[in-house]
Amino acid sequence: MDLYFYYLIINRGDLLKEDIGELYKNFICIKNMGWTKSLRSGTTGIGYTLETLLHKQEENFCIPDFNSIEIKAIHKYGKNIIHLVNVSPDGDFLFPIKRIVEILGYPDKDFPQYRVFQMSVSTKEYTKVGFYKKIKLLVNYEKKKIELIGINNQGKDLSLNVSWSFELLQERLNSKLQFLSIIKADSKKIDNCEYFHYTQIKFFKMKNFDTFISLIESGKIIITFKIGIFKSGDRLGKTHDRGTDFSIFENDIQYLYKRI
Image (cartoon, rainbow, N blue to C red):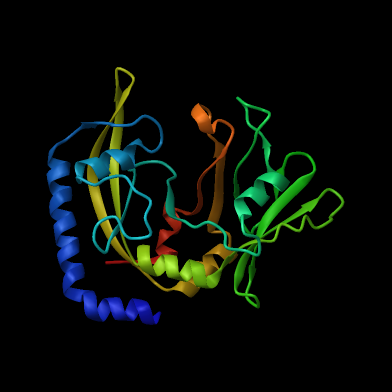
């Protein structure tokens, strides 16, 4: 067992129970409200609306959403992807996101003079980038890194030098994802507006860091780049990095977490 996780279990036992009890009490109040109109359009509406009902401000800090518990809101039905955590690469280059855009970027659909890069990648197989390049992830145990590797059509290495150190990933998991709550909601549309009814809650604790790495190696955890541009104002055309997302399908969450 990870020593940090052991420390949390021993020293946070009573506090964790309090956090679970408090979040559960808040959830029951929200559940009893019935259908709630989404406060934001698009795929992020389900999480943003729940955060607002919990009287939380939207943030992307490296700490859990609710005291010691990270919260994920998903639809009750469908093939859900759980977005675990955003971690920017910490490889050999000072500005890895800029390097990714320079080597792998493609024209933005609205402003083709600027380059963006939005794509998911895993260890399972190469993902095509345009007609001439392809990329995948590699777990390098010797260097203790998750590496993004790429080749062109002739098999020549693109020399991306983009990676995430085990140390960085473990630090982020320890600070944010040791304890997880998944809240599910039914959804429906009325007059083209989406409504949610939050009806189900579950609590989990992470197994260990080695399991996280092994799930990346098996392809169950993927990385999604969300590098866009600002499309208005003084920053028009400037890179807008919305995060580098580590995700897992809901059906695979059992491999990373144990149910509390």
